Length: 140
Image (cartoon, rainbow, N blue to C red; front, top):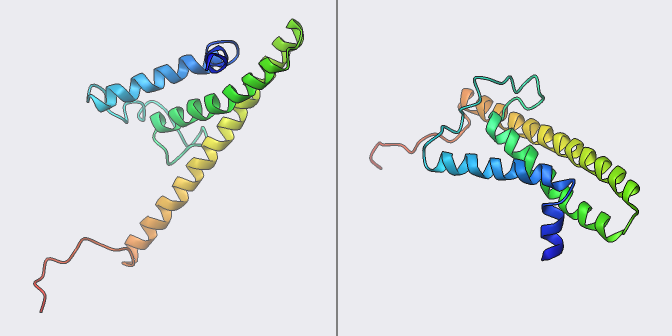
């Protein structure tokens, strides 16, 4: 367990750990109804960032969480490699950049899936094929 904490609070994962604490704090404030879940949507153009269809808070949370989940096991493996200082630092920076890049690609892929599902649901409602609310007429 100490290996996990060393990885989570050491370089390079500490960058994402701090961001993850911020994400958890934001969603705790949302659950307590102190902040609205769409508080950042008016400020950001998510379509320009490749995440159209997702609220800004959801896209940011997914980006940080996936990056953290990818970075922790890679950091543990890098620690186990027992490399000299300069190589460790260089590979740590590459690892952080790789985790963030892969996290961004997965987040934009998720946004595309949400966009497709939303568009399909909208088309089905427009054509009357989506299940609507239950009928209020009495059964015959």
